[in-house]
Length: 538
Image (tube, rainbow, N blue to C red):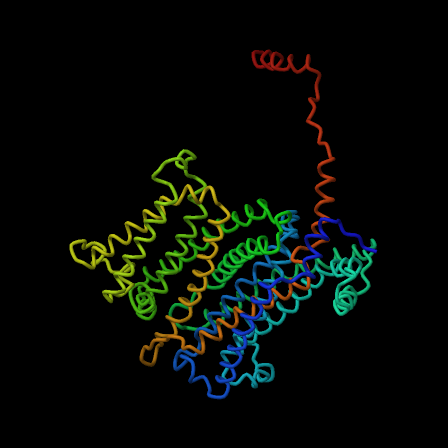
């Protein structure tokens, strides 16, 4: 019989058999949203894609933006579970289960976006029957299918010992069907030496395989765009740019989920400062790398000023796509500011009245009022970012509003630094939210502006319809629904990995590393400088 420590049983196993009213209310709300999405998709199948904003030449829109974004957040499990496992990082143990679940469900919902985008999903089999090896679409389908299967196998492999623990420590008053489920899934796991050796070997092989598979999926998805001659896509940097963005958004979403799971499931004894600190460091590194790639990509386009590429860039800088582009830039700058700057401010700032919390809150409220005045006067919100005349002309009503807005926004950001330093977790959660939203907008900025500026026909514009927005909302609701149901059936923390980590920590604490001893007696060591000086003089 597999034993489990009492603290792990009370915190990880017992809550699986208790559900409160809040859980069922959340499940009901998410189910309603998913049901509405199903109705809208059936309507789209019956009526056709004319209920969407997809039209010639923009046949890719919100669904494909969501697809690229969701396969990106799936990199969280690949990095945390596979990469850190191979590196032997002990702090990853409490968060591997959540990261691997994000990967599996993220990939499944991403595959669903392709079905949404197809006007005739019943003809999917034709991609296999008539697909050509020269087509990146076939590569992408192969990579996605392989990635899903390997990720599901990796999740099952890592949870296998916990199935045995749940089977042997099942409560007497638990439902019989769940005991039967755990018994089947355990596959006769008894925890003997041979089984552990096979498990470790399997996990190592899967970890080695899943990293190149994950990278290949994001690279091949980028090749779908970069192997065309469309302006803004035909670039060799797009492959690594997608991989960097995937890791960045995946870690940000994982951080937010960890904080939420820690609070909802009372996992304070498992998820703590070590996980927050190390994930925060990864976010800082990825933020710097992302800004480098983004700057490099747009610098080449600005300097080249190609007759085909520059209109796309101009549309993002001050045209129809400017709000989405500059919103992305502002969100990523805010995230980088929150992640980096509070760590380097002086400690004495925390006691000054100028940096009390009421100052940034008041400034933010006033900035929101000014933004409302801009909307009431029907000014284009893009003037906040791209209208230099408004920003540098403070003697007009429009210029006054823009100037006051940026002064108040800057004051709010600057005076919030001490509070962010004192509340690093809350600040990082906010920064992660900015990153997730910014990376979704980045996918929009890659896809939509290029399709709106074709070579041969008239330029057009794209805006999603209500059907598309509801299906995307239903997709995220389905992700959350699967996430909640999964962790009501299985522990959110890997019990066996945490127990193994405790054994390793106890063993390391008992190991005494002796201090290095001098190889010569003290008397001879005192004579060495004198002998060296005599030799130099001779």
